[in-house]
Length: 355
Image (cartoon, rainbow, N blue to C red):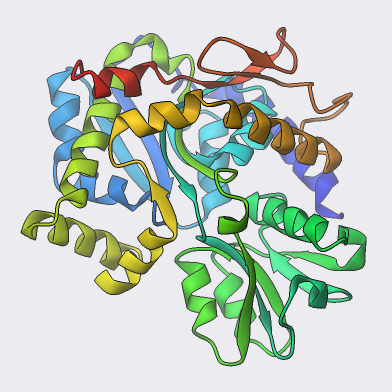
């Protein structure tokens, strides 16, 4: 894949650039988090604009700036070079971008997992995954869309050698699919919902077929977690927002309407996306999910995919090159190179009413 060497170069540049930034420091009062448009991350838009983030930041004597990005990968890159203290991203991208780039990162909030929000759509006569054979497939290369494609191909007895992956930014993928030249895409909501409305298209695979494998999280610098105020403010703001949006009252409707509008759809469209998302509206189910044995199996699969696609950094000898620490302290992979951590302690504090 042509972009692999480019991505490795970018990762090297990101690591070098870390020394140019001073944002990742626990000894400060001002923090920044980045987010991009996705059904499970729209609550950050509402939390920021409604004043919920400011309320919790004020409680702990800090400030938190919440910044939207239109390009998902760029938001993660900006976090990786130190311009932000936290960023919304999936479990795979947390491993292959900041962790692989040498940034010790922690999944602070596990908000949901995709249960149909990521999918493969074909145009024309194609009706199944096997119909991808010989096609160009447009997706954000080396993202969870690529992982979803690989899982779909495995189930169909195919490999990536049976097709050609075309790297396409999430900001461009809907427009690309509208052209005659593009016949298949892999993407996520709300983009997935947009391409599915086009004429003569067929969804052939989605994340509900691999439930719990594409996890949507708020990842923060492990160094920033040395200041517990930062973590408590974020977790407090998140679960207050969850309580508002889960309520079947006017406030809940207004909150979801805000999120729908901010993501370019209406309330019914946003509700449809939520229906394909396993949201953790309360902290206890999120803690249970993260502490389950399934997480270890998922991250093992993700690490293997990432190694096979050259995403764990130059010279990575195997899928266990980067250590992944689980909530119970167990480490998948290298114990001397732990760069991705799952910490359920703050979500547990929220569940216990201690935030």
